[in-house]
Image (tube, rainbow, N blue to C red):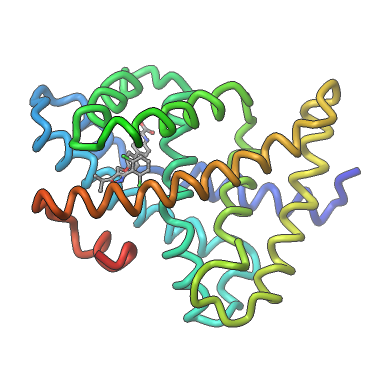
Length: 228
Ligand SMILES: CC(C)c1onc(-c2c(Cl)cccc2Cl)c1COc1ccc(-c2ccc3nc(C(=O)O)ccc3c2)cc1
């Protein structure tokens, strides 16, 4: 069962995950009434930029992350940003936001110049995440496991990252058994989502290329994190 230090670790990560959210005044912009493809793209760019800032703050709270080589910290953030944002935006859809953000976010994503071939797998993913009914600790730990993926491009000390990831995977595995006793395969299903995230991350690279071809502008932070 979960040890005392694993409980403490889970609490630190879950509290940080809940503390670092997109500011409500930024999220509220989704509700404004212009719905052109241009306007949608601009709003989504603002959401993504804010989300990256939130993500950077969140990773600082992952025990051990700041002890990693600094260049490896950057490589992990760059390599996991898209996947972490798929997970975070998935919560908006599965949480059925009371403020109606769910519908408008879906509408804006569907009408922002993303081609249908990416929209389908994207919303299939959102649906498959929703069906898991993850508790907030599982969401926080799954995002942490995603960030601590050792084989991201340019990571030098993969062993150090692997040790951290294994610590988190151990807590997540025990938590899944506790939270979903009737579903022994639940942990395996969660990890299966990580595979789906990798595929979406590859689609995302192509989405960026097609946006660039249509001369869409990104913010300096997104240009830095996505090398666009
Ligand atoms: C640069 C833009 C156009 C972009 O490129 N790819 C994606 C992209 C896409 Cl289109 C899908 C997945 C991942 C990426 Cl990076 C995006 C938009 O990324 C988003 C990132 C985060 C959110 C987001 C996250 C949390 C939220 N929380 C609330 C709340 O009320 O708590 C409300 C709105 C939120 C919006 C929305 C889009």
